[in-house]
Length: 456
Image (cartoon, rainbow, N blue to C red):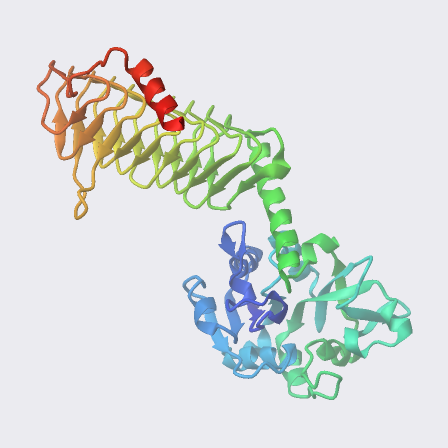
């Protein structure tokens, strides 16, 4: 018997006040619905159908290959959405149909597997108990058996006090589900077709089984405050898993790691760190405090603190920061340094070379064991095009040197502090470009007399 999964993802999420469908809102760096699809797949679903509606194109764009999408043209309720998906399936009558909401990314594969394992009747559903069940359908029981689910707007005062709620996650006998969907009507306060009404119908065929999970796992997203809460829970799970794998975190509640990030055992993560996209951190590296890394690779034994790195490659034993910015295309080879208030863009810094402080290096190549003095700028843009600067190995660039590209400094060359270098420098040569220093004796006294005269 196959497991056919339906993911309900047609809602607009009006309370989020966003043009984007709520199921593509990011959770730990991934669209919300991606977490749901992963859990359903890991639970053993043989086929997945996603019901889309508002912003259908943007939802379909994030679905993995092999996942079918069907459009609910009019949002007439969860029962109607299920009818649309059921009609698109090829003969689901003999199979188990698993239904999950697309806005509950915290539901785990383990819980879905437990739901499928418990399924042996017409319907089995996930329930939870909430201190405040407002907004959820109440599970109405008689002598312990489930009788029906009563939606929030249809509750009376007695039913509203029930704390056991349904969370829109079910398994159904495919044949009985089809027959029940055909009998649905919209005679309720919202004039919608409720999937929850199917539970009441199927209770007549035998007991409706339930499994209860922790309410945190069932949290849905209908507003930005709920999105933030779910995101926090997901990141807490991610951090806990990395710590189990040997990553040290001083304050996990202040560390933000996307699901796509890779960390090696022995990495040390300090507070205020954001690791996003295709970022990887090597063993024994120290990241933070207060660092933002996007699509950046950091090798073994490196240190990055109080800095922003985007699209950079940081080698082993490299030191970055504080207050450095590495822009896309930056490569720092082993033992290099990008120090305080240094910005590097689309440049290669060779092994052991250092840009210690207060410099801009753009569109440049630096060899090995060179030192770039404070205040150095590669003047790479002439107003029309970018140009390359090439700095050899063992080069000493004096402080406040302007390198006007295109220009090349040979191996072992030196530039004098305050120079504007516009021509290539030969290997081993010293290049100095300065105007002669002038001195005017007695100038301070003359200036004071002038000021006194003007004051009179």
